[in-house]
Length: 207
Image (cartoon, rainbow, N blue to C red):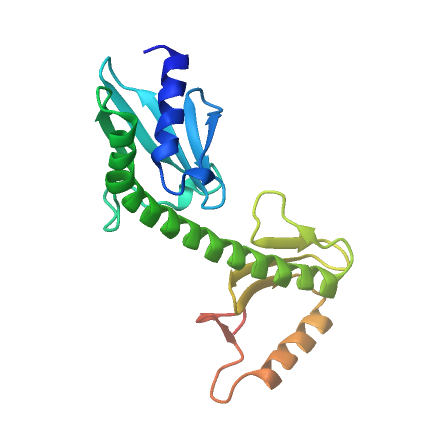
């Protein structure tokens, strides 16, 4: 089947998909023809697998593909089917609606939810690290290769690493007098019964 013939077939298939007004014919950046449903974030990629078989795959954009489950994951589901090209556009659309869209929608929703949670986590992390930069001042800045770290050398050498929503790991090089004042402050603020000489279960040097 020639490329234009395939495009014509896919356009006819789109007519029978529900809701048909939301599916748009287009070209994949990797070649091939796609039907996209922007409001639902769905993209169906079409490829002629052989002389009489058509592969239809539920696609995931580059910004969300890493969040989908892969083979071996308990919630993994196939998001592609093949159909016989001898079928009518209406029957192919029925196969897409009954065989492909249900698992594709579930996997896509799972990936979108994971991405939303990851985006929220990264936003909170960025906010916390910006607060650290503002508090330290000087030349405090984000690390060039690790988005979890803020570092600087002025007014003193330090590194702050984001661990969780409630914890920062901070390493600071201070003159002795200032270091002792910091330790005294930590001691005063330590919860009752907690040794001020231990942080995350590891003794501080000299403790």
